[in-house]
Amino acid sequence: MKAYKYFLLALLVIIVDQTSKLLVHHYMYLHQEITVLGNEQYGFKLHYLLNPGMAFGIRWNNEFGKLALTVFRIAAMIGIAYYLVKMANKNAHYGFLVCMALILGGAVGNVIDSTFYGVILNNHPPNSPTPWFHGQVIDMLFFPLFDHTWPSWVPFFGGEYFLFFSPVFNIADSSIFVGVVIILIFQRKFFSERIHHDDPSVDTVAPLPAENETPGPKEL
Image 1 (tube, rainbow, N blue to C red):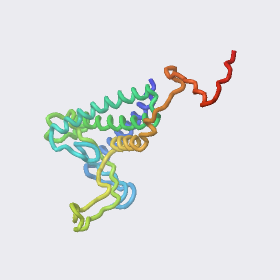
Image 2: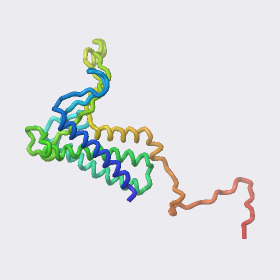
Image 3: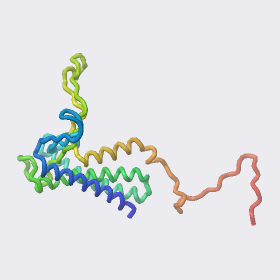
Image 4: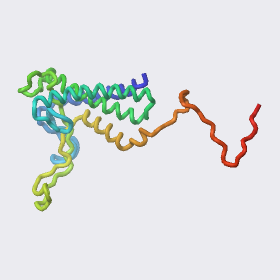
């Protein structure tokens, strides 16, 4: 199976993601913030949050939305795994397959949270009809780099406070984001047509002689 090494990479992402989430759950309290690099205001921080919605803190504020999101994540995970195997068997570009493995690992990481954390960690919202498929994703990576208050004369945003970078996310989100961005940047390289000369299904055609050039005698 040509895709096995890419599934191993996806497994590594899952292990790192789940380990980081469980460590944060067991050694930090909800909303606790620890500065890793920088000062109290800016830098790299660990900030323990529970996210019932999508990546980077995006939320769906209704019960049906949460269940639909979990089902969508499971379907996407299966689809990505199938596509990875298919493209590996077609000898797709190595970099593209690595990116797909990163996306798969991130997708599975968040599926585990949504599907099982409501039962294992009891972190489902209180109004959930069932803890299954309603687990909240653990986020912890926070990179506030600078803040700013827009001048009052700026259209639409005048007087509003702005913090960059405000979302809190996790390893799974990062893995998906990196995989997608690299594919977008190198899509021409990844999807350019390549002729595999070692493929017996590809016919080799002899070049035609140049104009006004007399072909030489055939060898006996």
